[in-house]
Length: 246
Image (cartoon, rainbow, N blue to C red):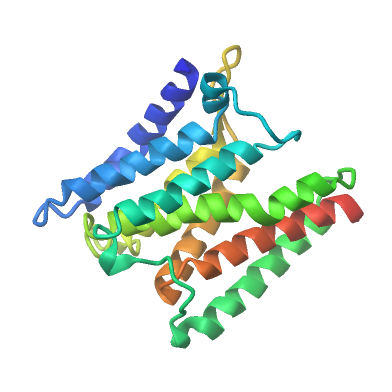
């Protein structure tokens, strides 16, 4: 339990400078900022062995964290209903798409999937065909992570942060997207156990940070969670399938 809490706090410490620099001190919307932290804690809890150790929940025989992802997804849906007033101006939980964005988002989905597939095809990664893994990669990461990181976290941060993140004359786009993408990258890039020091996977961080930016852009462009979920699951499935059949 301690090791998980330490990781949560370390990641929060790493994103704190960005939050301070981009926080809209005129609005002082602390409540939404606290809700952002709350969904991060809840998501981290269910995406770790901690929840299983406390509740003893393990009803799916798999190497993957089906239970944790399912419970995290359910809690994200509960958050949408409980805090719907807080995200009323940025409620991305709709099937309706911004018609003007459709061709751009679809083009980006095709492009990044092809790029990921090409990179994977020429990589040395090779795994045995496993339908449990394919089913998991096709469904859970996109639903769980996009609902939490893009759908909720960005919705909570938008009213709390400035409309644009700038350092001097440099402009880094929407701070809510940058913060969540940075946190998304850290979650996938940093790992440590009881016996090993903190390990940082530069490739995993960079890869997921860039995709976090892209999916955040899709969310704001389409005004819907649909495209980020589709892109996330499609990309995961194609990449995983290629490592098994090439």
